[in-house]
Length: 65
Image (cartoon, rainbow, N blue to C red; front, side, top):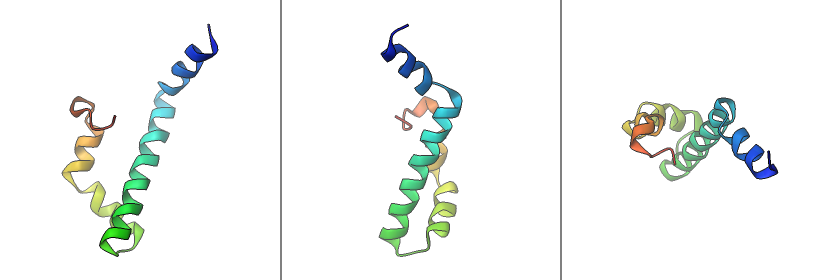
């Protein structure tokens, strides 16, 4: 197995995918907090309640890419 294949296999790991998704959600929440001038926790809560968040978790939409 080549180094590149090993890297691809690791990135496809469900644990790594969850870390990547959490990072994206965190980054989105930080940006929402800045733009809406609200506390980060409130931005995170609002994002989790949004259709965008639901679509982000729905792999059929491709939004997670």
